[in-house]
Image (tube, rainbow, N blue to C red; front, top):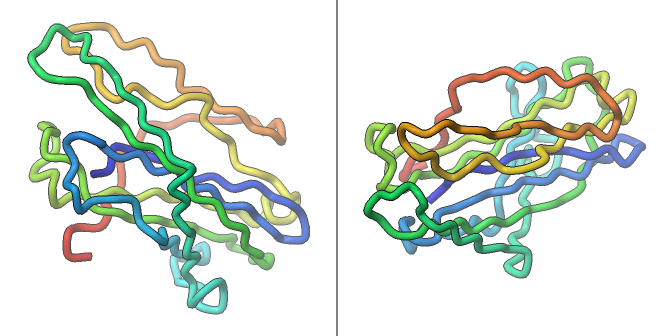
Length: 193
């Protein structure tokens, strides 16, 4: 079951982009049937949201799962609460695609079901998935610009009634100015889709 993840891109020149999709799943509280996708299907849309069927395989970049590129991270419960440790299984999918220049750029999106049953602030988390999306603007294609990359992952859980100190900074190889904004997460796929 999905804990989190992100989507980034790196420009190689000549409209070639390396796409990286990192997915994090719960090793302990997830369904045994909720393994990493193989392949992970990433939709390629134009800036208005229309699937670009002439790209990749009918508008879908199928990114192969590499089981040797996974990491299990076990985190001890230090909140003084009843409960066991937390384990997060992380993998990164990578592929390269050519994206011809478009005035409206591209939107890349990956959806996956679901969250684990231990989440208490989402109604029916076993039916709520996640969507990871990133926009490649026309200016990024022209200038061969790459996306920022998070410096570290946010904490998996926070202890109640305790301050949270977390540095959510990113690094941008192109030296771009970065602006942060909080937003509601996008709901993703469900068990049927």
